[in-house]
Each structure stands twice: as C-alpha cells, then as structure tokens.
Length: 162
Picture: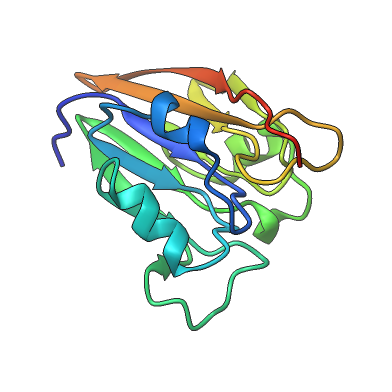
C-alpha cells in the first residue's frame, strides 16, 4: 500500500478523543489505532481526520465490527505490524521488537510512549491518547515511511483536566 504523507499513530483512547488529537494528526494520510478504542464513535471521529485502521485492545468489545486482532501491512516498502500488546502481557519495546517480524511495530496497552530501535526494527508505542491514567501525559505519534525507511516522532497532547 502506498501512503502519501505521514501516518498518525494512536492508542488507548478508552472512549475519548481529546480535541488536541485533531491538531496533532491534522494532514495525516492514514491513522493506525493500536487498541483500547472505547467504541465505534471514536473511530467515526478519527475518520474525520483520515481513514482509520484499528485493532482490538483488551477492553474493547469483541463485537466491534471495525476492529481486527492485528494488522500486518506493507506501507511504502516497509512491513508494519500493529497490535495492542496485551497478547504479550505487559511488554517492553525490546520484547515487542523481538516478538514480531516487521520493520515497524506499533503497540499500545502500557500507556507509556516510546520510540526505540530494536534489532533494526522501529518499535513505537504512541502512549495513551484518552483519559489520563498512571500519571502519564497523553500522547500520539506521527510515522513517516519513505522508500522502506521509517521515522517517527511523539506528539504530546496538552492535557485537559480529567
């Protein structure tokens, strides 16, 4: 699949799309949601920004028609895996990087934002974009893939009172 522009990465919305998400992901060509969506209305709101592909998290309803268990995509020459991460317990970036055979691995679940290279793979947890939990600031990420080379950056969201 060819994607012209950045890819928005989001996870752990838990039923809340903060207004800051619209600005942080403005202009992306695609959004990948790494689970714990919190309802179909969340995906509908994100679709107003860009097309969305999303995976189940451990709190999502298994009847949610817009979610799959994992995504394995080839985007602009890079193999991209997206899953929530709960299937691995409470994973670290190193553990996730070793668990999946992809160039870019996106996961959520821990609510801890991270971008790390592990054994040549780019491992990204965009953090939690929904209600603030575990004393962690809300965050999303943007991913750019050009000719199979991937780079990502975290975008902290200005915390609104929760």
